[in-house]
Length: 135
Image (tube, rainbow, N blue to C red):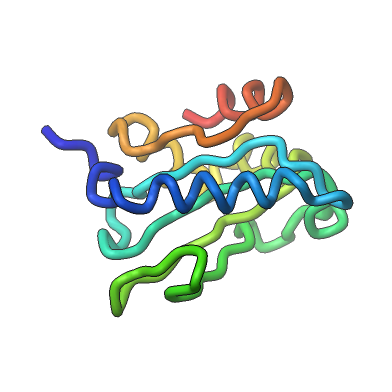
């Protein structure tokens, strides 16, 4: 069985480059970045999950949804027509609650991990601990 992440082999270097840019942010320290393909979501889209200190003011979304947005092709990541880069962003505090309460985005990420379609692009020590919580 081919893992879903293999659907996007040409984008991994660009995603790595994007993550490197995010590591340089001064106000929000990147803790974890995961390139993944969630089961049941568009196979045409490229997904990147990031945990950043201070993201969203370290607030927790009361409706139980992690912040997600998407955009199409850019000079840094040229994508085929109809393909989007989907970013899922959170902070450590919100992720802890999302894991505890099994929010949809965490279930999708855990399912991708179990299916072998999630690849950690970057994790510091705190990010590694956070990643271990996602099952």
